[in-house]
Length: 310
Image (cartoon, rainbow, N blue to C red; front, side, top):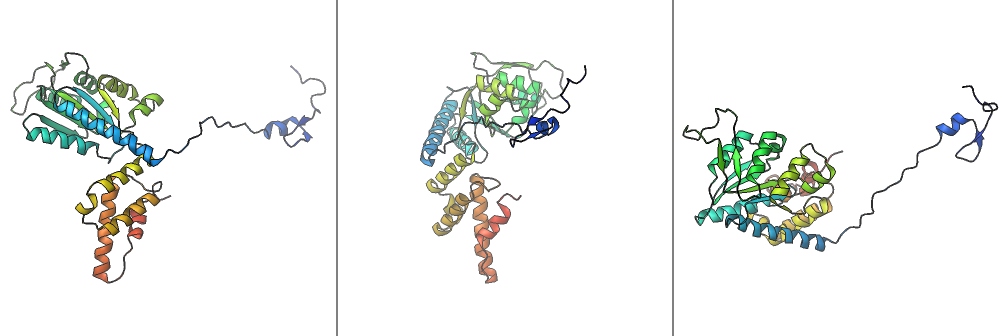
C-alpha cells in the first residue's frame, strides 16, 4: 500500500511544541514512567523492637513445646547472626542435660539419603533433628520428599526410601529399614525471608519452602532489613553481657555501638557477629597503641574491614 497523498510533507507536533517531521516526533517521545510502588513510612525503632521481641519470646515457647513433645515440627526464619541457632541449642542442651531430650544439629549440607538415615536414627519420641541453614536440601526433590514426611502435620509420619542404596546401613554396618514411622521432632532454621520468597516466587524452590511452611509451625522472626537488624543488634548489645564477655569497657562499647549505628546502611554485614568483629578491632587498636606508643584508630580499622566498598 502506498503512502497516503500529502503524508510525505506532513508535520507533527514535537514535545517542545514546535512542528517537525514524523521521524523526529517518534524519536523524541520519551516513555512515561509511573512509580507504582507504595510510599514507605519509616516505623519507630521502639515499635520494631517490640515486634521482634514478641517473635523471639514465642520462638522460645515453641521450642519448649518441641522439648515437651507437643510441637512436632517448627520452621523459623530470620537473617543470619541474630541468635536463632543459639536459642535453639540452648533450649535443647538444657533439655538434654535434664535427661528429657536427645538432639542432632546439622549445619550446612545434607543429602536426601543422609536425611532419611538421620530420621531413622532420631525416630523415637524425645528425639529432635535441627536443620540449621541447610537450605540446599530444598534443591533436591528426593530430599524435599523426606523433609515433607518428617515435618508432616498428620497423626502418623511415615518415611520411605525404596531405592537401592549401599548407604542404608547404620554406624555399626547393620541394615536400615526402608520405611519407618517418625515420632521425633523437626526444627528447620533458615536465613531466608521465606514468606517473601514464596510470594515473589523468587527462587526455584519457593514451592518447596511453601510445602514445608504449610506442614510445620512457621515463625518469622521479622529480622530481615537493615532497620530490623540494627534495632535487634542494639537491643542485644544493651541487654546482655556481650561486651564484658569480650573484655570491652563501657567507654569503648559506646564507641563501637555509635560506629555501628552511624554506618547501619554501609556495613557489609549487620548482625551480632558485627559486634564480635568490632570488639576484635577495638582490642587490636588498643593493644597496638600501647605497643607502638602511637595511636591506632578503631574507626580506621573498621572503615577498611567492615564497610562496603564501591
